[in-house]
Image (tube, rainbow, N blue to C red; front, side):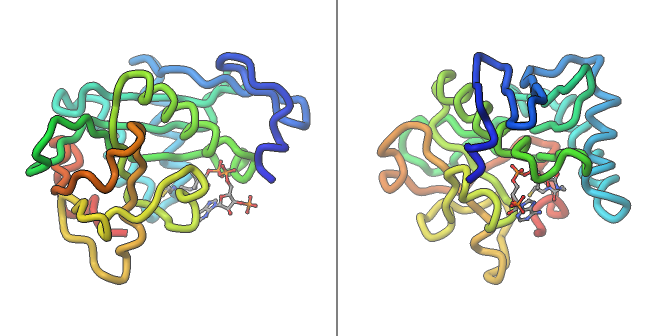
Amino acid sequence: MLLAHYVIILQNEHYFQQGTRMHIRHTTAEDEPRIIRIHLEAFGQQHGPEVAGLAKDLLHDQTAHPLLSLAAEQNGELVGHVLFSRAELAEAGQPVSVRILAPLAVVPEHQHSGVGTLLISHALETLRLEGVDLVFVLGHPDYYPRSGFTPAGVRGLEAPYPIPDKDADAWMVQELRPGILGSIQGTVRCCEALDKPEHWRE
Ligand SMILES: CC(C)(COP(=O)(O)OP(=O)(O)OC[C@H]1O[C@@H](n2cnc3c(N)ncnc32)[C@H](O)[C@@H]1OP(=O)(O)O)[C@@H](O)C(=O)NCCC(=O)NCCS
């Protein structure tokens, strides 16, 4: 059970069972080179350059704001990073505040110890307090449901680019305003940096 790994959760400091301390914080402009390296290391030679390029583009994309950029830091080293960019829900019929989670990465030597889950849960709580209603992600259907995401397409919430049927479960949503899921449908419109077909292939 993943939660058993945490013995103390106090503000932004998280202590893991083995006694190591993980600090979750907002990133600054000075963090950009390390953020790029995290995505390069985590995604490897095949996907690293594209994902790192996306992270960099998002950090500089004015249409992505408000942008939430959080890092996991241990002993002064950044070991994980996640971004949430602004999006819209076209034809929703009511005002709705939307974000897209992408990308998320944890450096290989810190994977499988709860860092990714911790970054997501901290970010979702931050977004909830900011009044965000819905958060979408295109990602692994075996990973994100543990953080509360469920398939979005079956709810009539379409991605900015068509998702092939075989990957339908990878397009997921989570409500931060209770009850909003089921009351709206529409098509997500993303920021400029994400608005490219290559970012919507699993
Ligand atoms: C995917 C990733 C962000 C998860 O972060 P993490 O800190 O390693 O994950 P957590 O420790 O919170 O959770 C670990 C669990 O998630 C699952 N998991 C981890 N990576 C997964 C992946 N790529 N696909 C599906 N499930 C995955 C496993 O079940 C794992 O449990 P286990 O340790 O018992 O095997 C991280 O492994 C990573 O950066 N991977 C490379 C980049 C990547 O694929 N990012 C894609 C996000 S869609």
